[in-house]
Structures are given as structure tokens and as C-alpha cells.
Image (cartoon, rainbow, N blue to C red; front, side, top):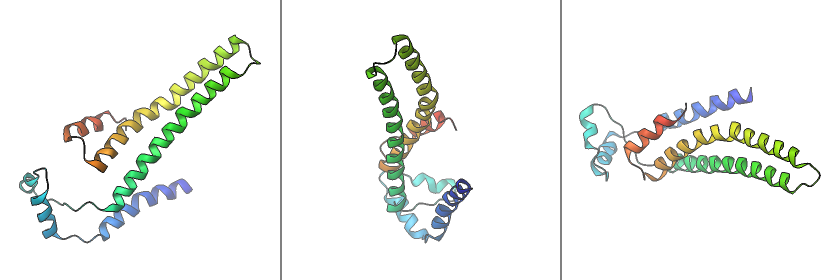
Length: 148
């Protein structure tokens, strides 16, 4: 039930913080006019909202990138450590070492490869939001290859 509460809080707190954030239509208009990529075309499409970059979401995104990288690093380093330990251990036969190595590689493929397929595109999107370094078309492509 702790997981349910964590999911509930993770979904409601950002929404409540955004709802409590004061919104000024005049500042949104100034931001539309003064941004470096020309986004004035958004006014022609209907209602719009634009706000200045706030430090709190940027900090959360940076923390998420660090967490995703560390989880991937710990997973890869853990499997590499198991393989190195298996090679250095002298009490087993070569046939048994080969079977254990094959099973470790299969386990790595079953656990880490799906995580890589999710984490790498997600990290690319988070890096784009943090630094605004990729184009819009690239981000659309990355969103399409996310498996969820």
C-alpha cells in the first residue's frame, strides 16, 4: 500500500503545485513574443499557455536523469562483477563456468535490455527538456520508440 500512496502523491503533488502557481496572461504574451525560436504561430491555433522555466521542475528532471543513469550503471556493473568473479573463481570446472556464464548473459538480456529500451529514450527526452538541445522532430521520433 506504500506503493499506492507513492503513486497517488507523485501524481497529485505536481498538479496541485501547478494549479497554485500564479498565472498572468500578459507575461505569457511577452514570453511568446520574446522566445528565441519563433513560436508566435501558437496564438493562431487557439488558447495557449507559456510560462518561464522554473527551477523546481528542472531540478526534478536533473535528479531523474541521475537516478536513471545510476540504476543502469549499477545493473551493468553488477552483471559485469558477477562475470569477472566467475572467471577468477578457481574451484569450478570449465564446463560449469561456461553454463553459469551463459545463464548470466541470458539473465542480463532478460533484465537489463528491456530497461535499456525504456530508459535510454526516456533519458533523451529528459535531457531535451532540461537543455533544449534536440529538435522537435527528434523528440517525436523518441516518443514513438518508447515501449509504453
